Image 1 (cartoon, rainbow, N blue to C red):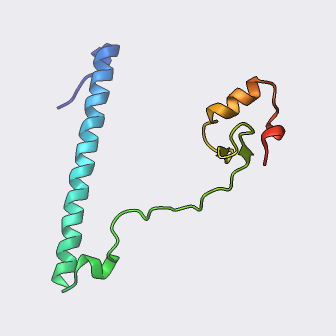
Image 2 (tube, rainbow, N blue to C red):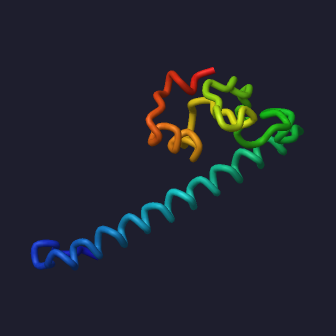
Length: 107
């Protein structure tokens, strides 16, 4: 099937490109499935289990991080703290609007 792309308008070209990209993704997935089946068959033929070769953990290991120490404290309510990471808490923004400086709120 030869498509004469010189006779296609802009919308037809975009449609053709998107269909081709979808098909390309489908072919890639099919190839991965076939390869996975071959690998499993080879492992089984050798008398091993998948876990024997690649280990029990399948998937990405989750990254854990230690909690970050607080960097700022709410002067009105000392129980409220903020590490300085992520979205600013409302009390922090309110204090800045009231004329406080970041260094005034630092622990």
